Length: 273
Image (cartoon, rainbow, N blue to C red; front, top):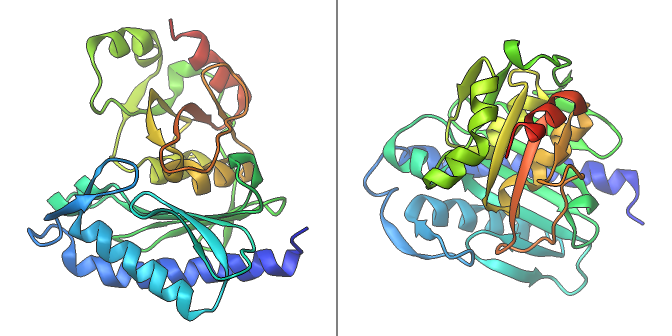
């Protein structure tokens, strides 16, 4: 069992790490150098130079702290660091790589710590919005915070007055038909291009919900934000209405609704044919 002081240790470590990654990638924001393709990550997606710099900075920082863990990362894949791993570090060093490369000022750094190899075992989550530097944090059982101020998700239950994010990237007409009633049923729709950050907007009560039912999103993107939403009082459910769960693997893909409360989550789910 991992004691509370160790969770505080990982929380503080991730906050510091996210700041180091932010410092490293900001000079590459919106540059041709940052957007240069340098390989293919473990998840099968193209790795941009800004992704590589972010991950290298994170790994070097953690290695300097002499901690032992299993890394689960979009770029590097699954790799042990140290001889006696304390748990799993689930990292998406740049969530919103396309935004970062093109100069769209919405992308984030997502770091989570889990005791076992499951999304349900996430105990610490940190998501930093890179441009401004705002940080969302959560420790299991201790609530969720935005820049050290406790936050709560939306209690709004009416879709007629709701603001909901939908990821519509790389979808076909059948997917639009599947979620069309949900899109038509809400008042306002958004998508900013960084799912971890948008899930955190659900935690903060800015969004009433965020929907990604494409089955394409990596678990590394949602690991930290799922805990943050739930600790803020919200819910994250899968396409069957159950709490979202997945193995911590860069190839694991998920579909989910993150919502401020179970009522609005179920209303959205029921509208999807």
